[in-house]
Image 1 (cartoon, rainbow, N blue to C red):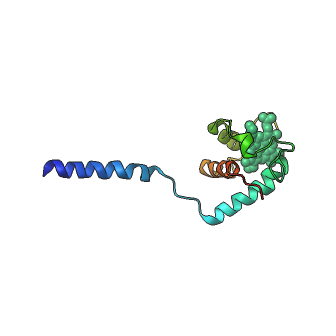
Image 2 (image 1 turned 90 degrees about the vertical axis):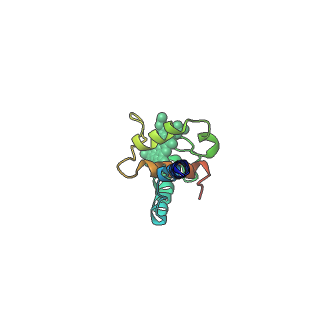
Image 3 (image 1 turned 90 degrees about the horizontal axis):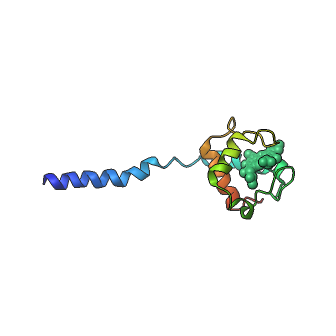
Length: 109
Ligand code: HEC
């Protein structure tokens, strides 16, 4: 009896762990704002179809080979000495991840 209660608890803890560590999904209205920002703000430098302009192409094929953390850090902190500004005052890390996922899935309007 003792053992089965313990193992039930253990299974519950193990099963719940990943669920607890997953962030809440972004509210739909915020996703719409971020998508707008992606097209209007990011698009103003990276091209309205993300093919590149002042900034490099953000098309899936051009981003895929690059480390994810490096790209997220670029979005949040910008690249000092270049035109790429830091976006962390305007978005969280989770939101920057959302933007990158959108770009990797092809965000062209
Ligand atoms: C004022 C112009 C400008 C704006 C606005 C801008 N970027 Fe950039 N971005 C750049 C430039 C220039 C670079 C390249 C910097 C360098 O030379 O390393 C860059 C680089 C990047 C990179 C790295 C690409 C790579 O292949 O290494 C990512 C990702 C990126 N920008 C995403 C974004 C996102 C997302 C937004 C909008 C939230 C945005 N940028 C808005 C100018 C801009």
